[in-house]
Image (cartoon, rainbow, N blue to C red; front, side, top):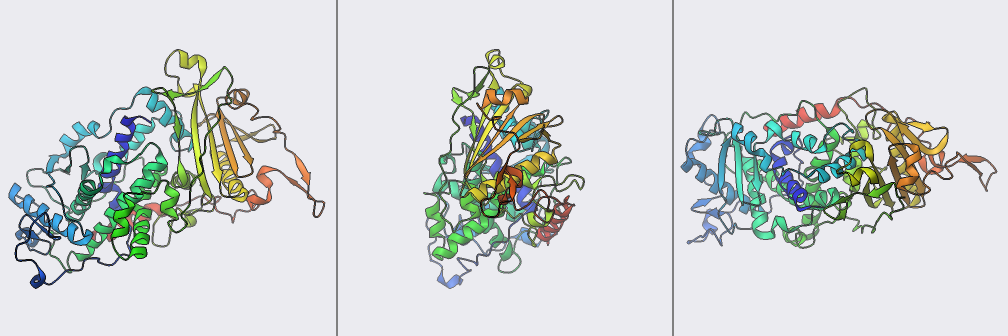
Length: 542
């Protein structure tokens, strides 16, 4: 993975809170860890460097003149400075750490941000774009005619209210009236948590070479920040005087890509529960601080924090012939690890389109309190995965291949053969949802003509599921030798009762999913998430 893509992901994670966390602010179960103390207990000579809850002359529970206004408008730089320092003190009071350095806060107009936002999303090379496009096609999130990077960027668009940039150590607030901006104090607090994390734990030091690594690290980083944000919000209006709520409404992109959204929101949704697990185990922030030295390595560790699950070392052995070759980016084979959270996003589908069924049923996808449930039977046995992009050798020799000259091999490992079969069933259902047709009754082979064109082979062997895609059935073996062999539908005699059962799609491990629509994955979802977003946004404002 190139540094460019890694840089893009780091910034995307720290921008996303301004929009995404407004939609899904997870309700942390943590109690105030440093409850407001008696002013009599305060040191006579506090210092910014050594006193928790005190920054540059401001205590966390100080009152400011701006608290009594009808809106959250800040009239000049002196008022902004006071709000920032008090917010820093409040973050310290909750988090139990002091800021080591000042945090610059800049306010820019939305027009200025839109002109310069390319700096947040460093332009990818054609090779990086190709690899990314193939990955998101494999997940059925971005079709062959759409650029994945554009879909990722549109998630932020007009909705960004601010971000923390680890490269410059500054917070940028985006306002429609930068001369007298309205400041959302709780969101400012969230971004200040990122600055505090960066000063103590160096957010740029973590490996973020895959989708799954990114979700794992952000599960800690955003789980920490959302936990503090939630506590900050609880204290406003009860223990503390705060700026009035802003009138800003969370904006949903016109053409929301809910697969990408579900993937991006994972750290905000599951991260607070992961942090709560650490807090409860250690009765304080020391376990969270220690986690930065040994952060979660995969999203499954965030989803199942009590299991201590180790991931398998999964690699795809190149079995292509001379007509195909693994794609390389800057001299390295283009690989990706999707992880459990990414697979849940894949199976969640598009819940806003009532005509489009999803693998995971809507009532299984959302919890009663309108959060996404990432612990799903189709994916909860994840042990590891690797997706390798392949390209037509002749096309590669002549430059960057087009979408029609690409394929992939996606090997996944599971904790049991039953888990492997469950995932394979889910992917076969996903193929059918996207109008795949079986190839001449050959088991495990499918073809799609429309948005995700090509031939697909799904193979299960013990705890391993391998998925191969090529432009045509004839080219599948060129990418993975022998993948179409023994693909005729077969039967075997059940040794216990003499009955016959078919392989793969009708195996016992599938729980009869092909015929039983009570199994998650067959009911067309309604607009429950749209309702959830509206409810959560309203709850956040109240």
